[in-house]
Image (cartoon, rainbow, N blue to C red):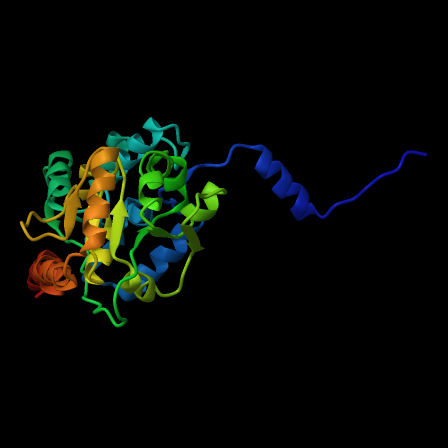
Length: 320
């Protein structure tokens, strides 16, 4: 009599899920049709003067023509079709599928006001939606002063899992890290990118997700950003700066930041320049107060919310 084995249903489902190719990056998730009636009922009860929509992925919740009476403001965070194109170009499988410029334009057109995270994308969004009022609403970065003593000759890099698969970190480890490790540097790798790489070179500390970045960033001498493509605003660089860190970064990493001769970013494209720049600035780390001053000038709450405050004031006056 043949033997049989049994396994929990969850185990079997997970097994077959692993057999299928999983997405490399999920940029957002559209709501299920069943969620719309519940949201509509809540909206009717609250009857807000304005409705802030968190990215294009929430737009289907307010697509009903009966909801047109609510003034809509989309907070974009990113131009997602550009991010999808960049990630597809390096071989990623992206969800949701079919996120084209045309599709994103259709979703954005549901709102009269659009908040862009940086000026270059504000121009692009205005081109996509000429009928809309497009304004800039950058991420605010509140200073977090260094609490510990001297830095310890280390660098840090914080990113998501899918960054590890793109080849940018592999490039850094293959072309740049051997030179840095010879000078005794260490690298704190924060986030999901460490586990996704599996085997890491000597001197790299894969810390995974951490509850509080401040102690790690305060003990580092520099941050790095070896990215080659992207969109939106690299918010991690603002996080580094508000903790007093300068970042050695590729040009692609710095897209959308405020131009400033005293910006806490040191541009380095190409492996030899990148490694030489790190070594030079680790030896004498830039002053943390210069990085703090940059975010205080450009990414304070007043600048971050100025455009949104103007829109909300206008809507409020229309309701009177």
